Length: 224
Image: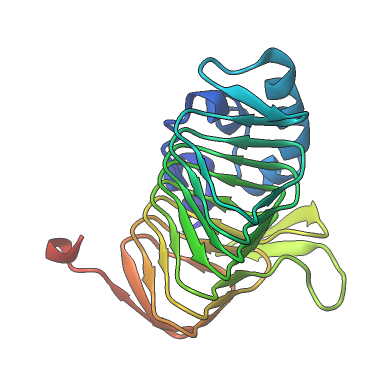
């Protein structure tokens, strides 16, 4: 189980301007505190095919920004991404191509790889979402423990992240049902789906279906 929390087991980073960051660390929470500085470097060097929307914000080609969207710098928005009405990007947000940042969704200090969907009333803070990851309506990535202590990731090993704020780590093709709450430090493996209204905590294996916090079944191969 412990290896399922390593970056190389969770993500295939095909986003060229994020590859250096993902290749520089072992565990995904190590990236979280580096997001702002890494975006600063991208802004200073520029990205081929990207334009300046305003100071501190780069956007790719065919980005759609609906009325009512707020983007606070720094931010990088990949090609073909759609920002729907009421979306609020609070800074330190970087995403790949063809993402959907939806109605009244709020993002801050997070990374989205390609084809990520956070389409309806979602909160994503201090989190990393892999390719084709999806949050159902109202799913929340909680990033702060009620006791204010640093977040730990609990697998077969307990990892001290050193971070007071850490949301969720969703691997490629993770699918989170409507109304789920992902408690700080939750990790969901590749190709894993989660039933609606599940309160999540800890590390969930890849290729699984999470029916409740204590009921996890292996996904059948013909369903993958």
